[in-house]
Image 1: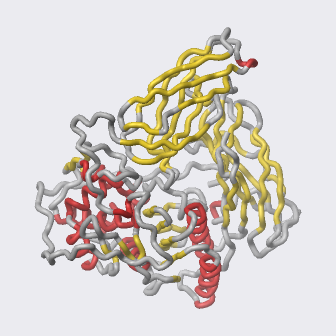
Image 2: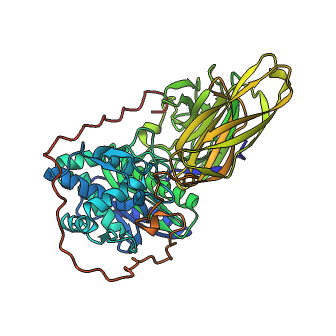
Image 3: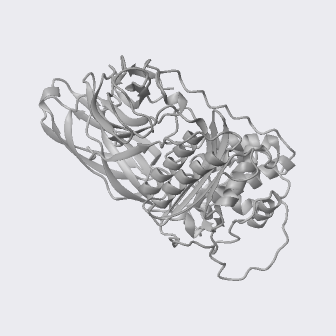
Length: 575
């Protein structure tokens, strides 16, 4: 089992920020943002705006030019939607991923894969696929992309003209992009709506959305590079939309991710002024719990607000929890709030939380939050919640040593070797075992591929034994974290372990002609690390000035395929 690690889920309590934006409220927001940014151990540029206001609510180093990482894909999305609006492209038009589109990391489509424009945009935005982004960059033309950024009123957002340049932008440029988008004035109202809906489907949600109340809609795009962590987007609060841009560099990735989530929760709290604020100290690694046995966790809750919590009366605050399955259905919840007692501002209390587990194994998540004196959950009013991943498993049947090669080959099988020792109490029957695995992008902690490989039958009369089986590597390239465990009947039946694997090209290439040149050095893990004062890298060879040329017409216009609206959060104790 992986060692438990801990992180603080922080939601700062600050004064209300009226829609009219009073000087006092603005000063409060500024002081809170300054305090967070001042304690950040790295470089940071910030932009916060209310789209209905003429001036931003808060800025910090907003005009510093910074390497964008994957935020450049926002510009590619903009120009694609522009061409769709002009009728020069249709969502149903197809592209084919070329070998030169593939980067060492972050390319999830194999060369030769055919995608519609709609599918390519979805991959580029929601999972930040590099191959689709680079193909669209080449097809649209960087000069065209830059020209339309300028025409849209977005200055200091530069898309690389060739493989020798870097993409760069200022926080003000990215903030202007999202401010115009929030007002539905980017390209056209219809195009703005399509872009917002696509950005709402973002699957990398460990930054801006991480500490917001569950169900909060965020239309955003992340960016990652060695030493660079960004997130930018629109947060839809009960009192209106707010734009947040946070671009960081020269610090640890986990620290930057936590910092950005704190900025977002601070902004959200400023808008809605919740009745309480809390910090939680809980395990962030997955907690393993055996089927039908109670799970006990020690949880520390800090009063991060300005008012004391009392042991009785209207100031009484309790702790509530819910266990939800992978589809967010409530499996079981606390029968009543757990009393926290007298807690002064800045003080904390540590209590055990005993969770009754469901009768069926599977993936789950435990949500913790505050409740008022009447037992009403406060998360819907902006009070932070904490989320703990849980895996409810069958009784472990064997201790296993799994040997997997550290070098795998895309779409090819490698032999895995499993030595096992049966656990006596569960040897009453034969066990049909398999290896469940997940391939995780270490930059985003996102699962990019997963699968299950049958191993064989562990007989009741066998105490030890070995299995040999093939493991076919998924169609990606680069360095990844491989997480795996023994499974029985589709459920976890052994300790989850991890190792780092490198996935290279096929051993024999056939029609594979190699990875080809990458568009941007910044898209690779071994790319340049920005300094404390990042600046755009000039082209090594001067480029001839060329006129901006339109994208050629492919076929007549067609209405893009509508995407389903995300389902509203399921009702429960913690909305």
